[in-house]
Image 1 (spheres, one colour):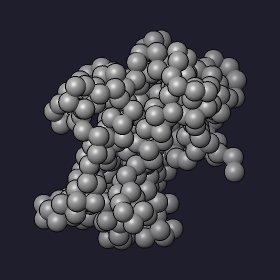
Image 2 (cartoon, helix red, strand yellow; image 1 turned 60 degrees about the horizontal axis):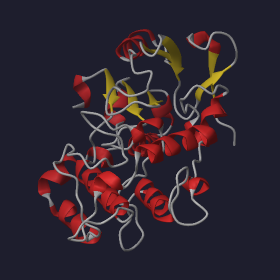
Image 3 (tube, rainbow, N blue to C red; image 1 turned 180 degrees about the vertical axis):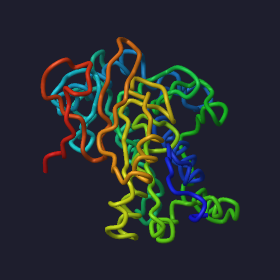
Length: 312
């Protein structure tokens, strides 16, 4: 209904629920292959990653990616240049404290790359490595499995799945086809009326990959041409889980900026976001793929950062 709206804010959109749910199950099966087995040959999911393994993975991500934004602060802001490689954490042989087994590294590589069908076509977007993947609490744990029941019930324990059969079932579901709005990229009517649309997505969202939303944004840009850049922005929120929460600057207002854009013609760039803990601090949220780079001064203040395009 493009004629009913002048400005829209879209957060962590559920545009591909069938594919995202399938990807979550598929990822669990990949992780299960690195798990110890019970007497029935099923994965003991709670033992795939120990607490020390989770800490090792978190520290490994930070060692490889944290300082890319000019400040080592436990956050990965420069998403485009973060190329975390779990293999750098692999033990020389077997499994020992302070390193990951080959099976764990393989499971991480496969699960985060996302599922592909028998022809090699991606079924769903990859999941980015981010600080929230190691989270173990409620209501939705991070992407690394804990063994606790999740939003879909008990954790799957099987070691294999017929991915192509599951994909065909999703594609054959008439209701699913009606809700698969990720193919609706032609927004000419909305844009032609002067409509503006802002997207945001938590990078640590364990339900819908932020890369899936970024993929939609880029395809919409291709479909709509220059009118898209004149009407839309996309904001990645590092550390944020599904819609809110996590180790993130997740307090922000995008409604005000979209109103200013529609009514005053003022296009948003950096939008100030804050967090109350562990101590109150601010960061600018920058239109992706630009990121907030530390330029000096009080690291708790937004003005100590500037939005920069990633190198390369």
